[in-house]
Image (cartoon, rainbow, N blue to C red; front, side, top):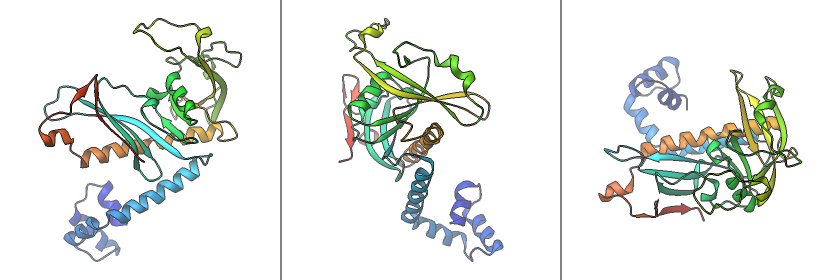
Length: 285
């Protein structure tokens, strides 16, 4: 394990790592010998990673509900001048495996509604997923949400359903720990046109109770996390710690792109288009 980590996180070659191991008495091995052992250690390293992630999830998450992480990444081919495809992925942070994936073109926006989730799951998302319609999609599926929130882009109301500005409450956030604000999110009516005119709160089709959890970074910046979990399920500090698990999907994308080649280029052509979306999707049964 020490040799695998030394090779993975440093600029040392296999020969250098073998010499380092010999000098410290870790192992008597050559560069080629280390190469053959690392090549055969993939299943073992995957098991170690899964156990490490499992312990981290259990330690940081106050709730014991199934966790999922959702995000999207851009895929481009040789000679591309812009975004060609966007992969929308849902993973299990405990195992690092796929739960569902959908491939769209550049016009396919991110959203919770793209993934079929199960009742009781907690879905972690970034600011692109903290939308009223996305929240409604998860509520309809009886799933819970933990997502980074931009208070400028989502309507937030108090318990009396009066609109409030969370930015005005940032002074109440301490330097350490989290601060809870009980809010409700109005769900906008169905959009019948491309007009971006504002709509009245009286036209809201539903109201979803939620919590806005605020915390400060090491530089004093306030971050907002939106969640539908109750205080009994996870405290404000546990919500902030839970959101930190999103980094795993970034590593997942990095590994995926380093190992995979888009299949359309293997066939010599791009996938067929239909109304702005690529007809490629998969969900775990």
